[in-house]
Length: 246
Ligand code: PXP
Image 1 (cartoon, rainbow, N blue to C red):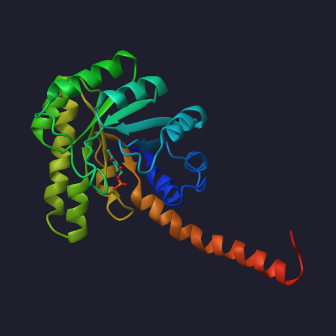
Image 2: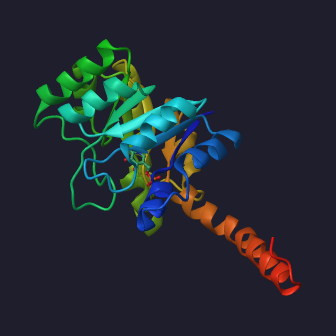
């Protein structure tokens, strides 16, 4: 069975909407772990739009599963990761204007930058994963650069599934990519756009060890939790009606 890393960035997105304490990223991580997830994933973006440095350091101290830190391959981020020591770093491309990580890494453009980041992190026993599209060139280059893992970008499969168009073709691409990655000595993860509806065929690929899922789980949590949250407030209003102040 593939393990599950839950990306909790959106808990921080909600908190940052008011710049208040709630909802708490650390409390969310505790609940995610209690539910049985195998890891916590957060993306410390250069613009700090959701997760903050203190969230990552707090998670490092408090979580009992593994901490996967997604970040850009910059000197600033590498220095931060070396200080915080997550269990794994996933290098991702980052563009300021994007709503989420929109694509896989372009390793061809600046391989030395990735090689340097991988070497610095792995020299300190922090294994590195590269978030890439499922194409042979990116996979072979990931192995050549010395990464421990790749995370196959499942976004195009998810999009095809949503549009009911070429899903089998996108799935077959991921299946062959996962096989090739294993053959060249990489360990394989997957993620992006995975949902309760589309996850099964991906989770059934034997080479994929771990899946990172965020948006759909947090969206579902807000729906399944809303009824209880409203009921709890109504109980308080009822208490006030009967004259209680506490
Ligand atoms: N994996 C990586 C590398 C990501 O950047 C993201 C999004 O932050 C995810 C997985 C999770 O994607 P989603 O939120 O669509 O489940």
